Image 1 (tube, rainbow, N blue to C red):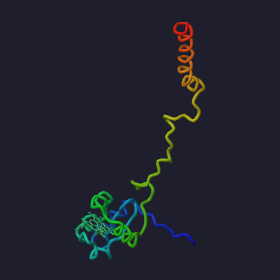
Image 2 (image 1 turned 30 degrees about the vertical axis):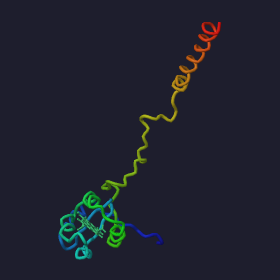
Image 3 (image 1 turned 90 degrees about the horizontal axis):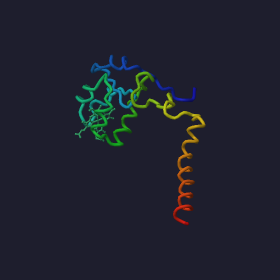
Image 4 (image 1 turned 180 degrees about the vertical axis):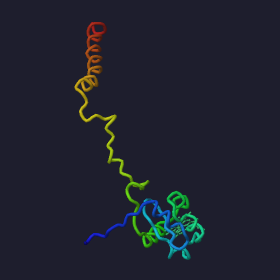
Length: 134
Ligand code: HEM
C-alpha cells in the first residue's frame, strides 16, 4: 500500500474524546489529537481542552492562526471526518445545480433570445427608410 491511508472518524467518535486524557479536536474536517501539544500551545492548554471533542474550526479561524500554526497542526493530525460529518469540504458538485440551467434549453427559448433584437432592428431600418430618409 503506497498511498498513505487517511483514517476516518465520525463526529460521535470525536465527541467521546472530550476528556482531558486524549483531547481530539476537529478543525476544517480534520481530526487532531492535541494531547502532546497541550503544553506547547501558545494560546494555552485551557482553550484546547475546552474545544476537545468539538468542531472548533470557527474558534481556530477566529484567532487568525499563522501559517506556522497550520504547519504545526499537521503533526497532530490523526485523520479526517467521515464524509457524512464533514462540514467544510463538502463538494457542491455532488449535486450539480440542474434546476436553473437545463442542459438542453428548448428551441423556443433560443429563438426568443434573438428574435426581439432582430425584430427591433428590422423595424428601425423601416422607420429610417420611410420616415427619416425620405
Ligand atoms: C492543533 C491545533 C492548534 C495549533 C497547532 C495551534 C497553534 C497555535 C500557535 C502556533 C499559536 C501562536 C500564534 C500563531 O502562530 O498563530 C496559537 C495561538 C493561539 N491559539 Fe492556537 N492552535 C491550535 C488550536 C487552537 C484552538 C482550537 C483554539 C481555540 C480557540 C486556539 C486558540 C489560540 C489562541 C487564543 C491563541 C492566541 C494566543 C495569544 O495570542 O496570546 N488554538 N495557536
